Each structure stands twice: as C-alpha cells, then as structure tokens.
Length: 148
Image (cartoon, one colour):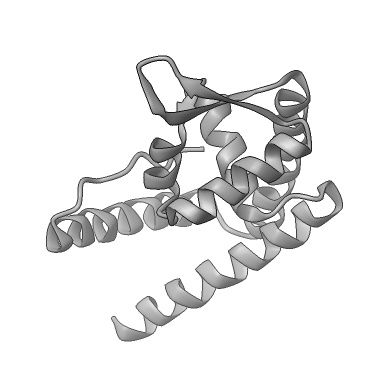
C-alpha cells in the first residue's frame, strides 16, 4: 500500500505542475485558477469562504483578490451583511477567463488520461473516493466537494 500512496503523492505534484504550466500563458497562478472556478460555480463569495475552500491564509487570499481585481477578473466589494468582510464577484472578463481555463483543463485531463481504460478509471475513482473518506474520518474534517 505504501507504493500506492507514494504514487498518489507524486502524481498529485505532477498534476499541479502540469496545470501551472498550462495556466502560465493565461497569466494565472493555480490558486487564481481555482478561485475562478469557485466563483464560476458558486457566484459571489466572501473572501473568507474562498480562503476556507482553497485552504489558504487570509493574506494569500487578500493578495489573490487584489491581483485578480487588478487584472479585471473580479470586483471586490464590502459585504452588505458584514462591513468588515469583502465579497468577490466575477466580471465579464472573469467569466471569459474561466471559459478559457475550463477548455485548457479539459485538454490537460484528456492528456493525462491517455491509455487508461474506462474500467481502470472506475477503479481509480472508487479507490480514491475511499481514501478520501478514510482521511476525512481520520482528521475529523468534513468531506469537500471537489467535483470540477
């Protein structure tokens, strides 16, 4: 089992690097790409919600929000329910950038899945889901929805 866990860890790192490489021409970091996806799926979100979803520090999210706002991808406004909180909303450019990044991610997914049979994909999905549930139970953390 140790070899499987090492492969999983190494594969996750390689996937992260491949996505960063694919995002580079679009001038996005992986964290910005993930934030775009959150905002596209969920609509306007408070920075603290984005921080929790991305498991990042408040300073990282603040910097991310500033950079995305400077790039014209989001509008950052004071939350109407809490004047201390900021809410991010995708702009038209943000929606367009998300669409571009979605196409890129689909191409990367196809690239990494070359030669993997449907049966193997099903077995991987089942095994990784079980590992995720086991880790969630062991850490006491709620299971996150990671569907993309």
